[in-house]
Image (cartoon, rainbow, N blue to C red; front, side, top):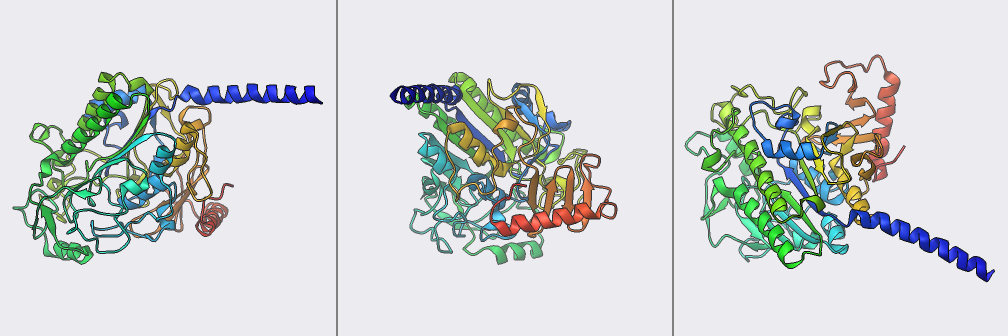
Length: 486
């Protein structure tokens, strides 16, 4: 009996060594997650763009895998940001439609909820959130900026370092927040700040609409430099990486980088103005490419590119054009898209349930694990980031984490063709669509995305049984409080 126990322990020991070996082969990679704001399926050269040049991202795509069936969980900003960090559809939170508005809004992430940041930090990662925040602060509103420091934000969600906008570059108060401290030494009131073309008229109905949304005063940092916002984020990101490698080279890092580009206002530095053939928005996409290029150069310079997992994606689909495509007037009539299709051939744009609203670019590079020069058509959603990272770093999610997140590690490494069979999408108005396999249901309309990616042919009358199945599945997913795997 004793011999048998010894043998059993020996076998268990061998198994443990094998498992540990598999885990150590990941070597806890550095992870950089870069999520653009309103970057569309047709905006990058590697996805077919011709009027916009994105050589840096295209090169990373050659070194990694392009995903052609990747989706944001919502077709607007805040819900996706919440879902990425929590692994949970945002419509399960208090935000049932639209977005959080300005920087005076209370935190959307619940006090007892762990995020990717908490998860990474608990496994020994040095963590940073740099870029657009737009997830609220503290627990009461309007948030008080007069005290110079804000509670309940990135630090509470596991980020050792943070440099973010209060909400976004076009939402009040317009300022940076560094490690919860307000960077602005002084604020000044501004009638309305949303686009760089202040000399061009903004329709009064648009101004009134925005003011109705704002729950705090219209203030801007007196030293705010609108053309340098993404450049500043880039410098902060490079400094974080460089200082980390210098001081903590044996510790992995996680960088959650969320630029403003190419969300309007399309402010870019002088060296990028007029650089694309797709107007100001095109220039802003090229600004995003420049940012990615600077980060990539830093990884190579520090000789850590081969042990760093890089993800490039977007929070939702694109707008059709910048303000200059609307006669230079916010809310103006559409005039031109400069011959560029920001969402490719897909139907719809940002804020809609059509594919153009939520099918997004996704590029992943991870030397030795993700295939190079490859395309992957497996269904994946940004809400899956949490479960996928948990697999990579060896973290076990509890029942209150990642309720809607699927482990996409087998998909991104080519071990499986599919990891999820269904996906719920959500638009600005709080309306749903659901996808299962090749079928997509939008209200009473049914589309076969395998043969009709542009969603032209409603086949609901031909397949009433599929319509019913998807309606039932949507109801089940909504009522359960988590994604039911069927």
